Image (tube, rainbow, N blue to C red; front, side, top):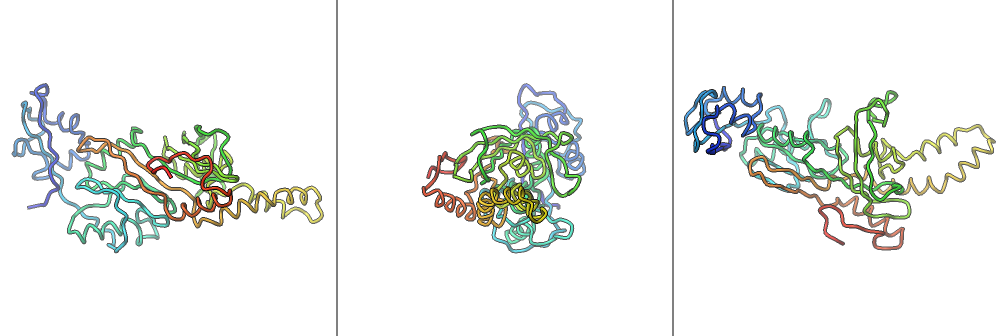
Length: 354
């Protein structure tokens, strides 16, 4: 007999007496059409009081409705041992603190050394059968909280929360300079750069994109900001912070404009007095920006916290990941340059007061 995950149960209340089972499954238990089709073909997929029934049957108050999903495995992924930083795990969810430099899911030309390979190995070592289902993504060089669903039902429900905007995702980033206001919204449509399709830009023809920010710490040449995504465009935070003149420290793709300004001035005709004067005035700023970028091997961006409603338990769950060591080192370097422990500091989401 096929092995199933633990059943998801629902007891019919008095006011739903006489409802069609299909209505209970879709409207009360939130089973999608796609999953419902799969469950109908599964021997013990849909049970009413322990008996397999048609979904057209009418239920009575006190009836026990159960759905069971067959166990799955990611047989197309090579299991690889990997150190995993587990923040939370139960039979429905796995929440990890993803390190920087690791790709979440195999992609064309990169089939190994991903987080998925490590998770599949971890589950197999435990003797568990799950298919890898990340409910959201983080860029390769972004660290922090990542949520993985252990079955299709959980993936569906967390994804729906993401789409509805009820999942609260907070990031922290060290940026060059300081935003003009201590808090604000960056409302700038994003689309591909027609000259470099792998990059994104803010453009009137782009897709609506909104990032909210709060300045948490300020330094002479940099700031630590907390960011909340209201939309989920590719590279959204990096593109939006560049658009307001505060690109992320260490970001090689969305670099500070001073780099291109310097290159342009260096390419000016020899003896151009105006260009030489502009270059000399630019050099101190450029040196500072390049020095700060040199502290990081990646963009200084970390997914610090994520809040969602547990699909089965119905309770609010908050997952937090501490600031990684490279960003801690950057923070210390900035404080040292400023000659103080921290400058104009406020507590970060999910972080104890220093």
